[in-house]
Amino acid sequence: MKKLNLFIILMSVTYLLSAQTIESKKTALDVGVLMGGGSLVGADFEVMPLPRLGLQAGLGISSFGASINYHLKPQINSSYLSFQYWKQGFGTNFYGSYIGPMFVFRARKIFQAGIGLGYILDKGNKWASESKDASVIALYNIGGYFPL
Image 1 (cartoon, one colour):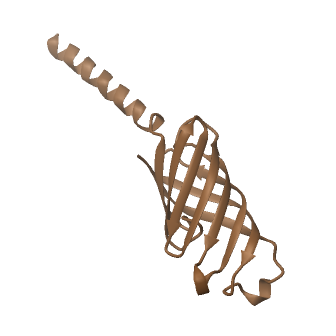
Image 2 (tube, rainbow, N blue to C red):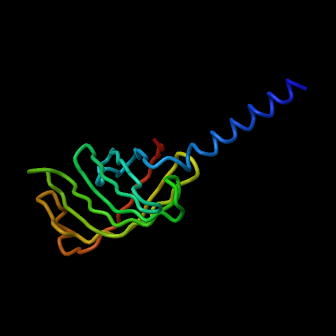
Image 3 (spheres, rainbow, N blue to C red):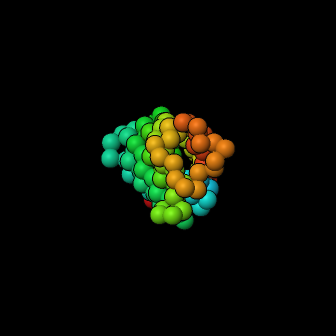
């Protein structure tokens, strides 16, 4: 009987701890392709100061970005609507900067992918000459996220 009681207590504690791991976390690290402001490889750090509201900033190899996120559920591992700013390139290698909405799908664990539209704020000297008249581009990324 003591073993059964001990087993039930251990299972209850394990369940309670595992149930609180993702839901109670308020920060996440995202790593992947076209993250951190649209870099080939980048990372973003997100903080949820209020339920459903996330603030995010990131760096990549040659870019940086920031966003305000509205999560569909009040937890860090939920999908979200985002208003993003991306700046790709620095100095003589500046490509462009964009601002616009994005939808980011987050699976229950690890995987995330986003797609949206970016209004072009500025074009750099690395901008392709055949698209000089463009005013909007597609924003997208894919990678993983890790609640902290």
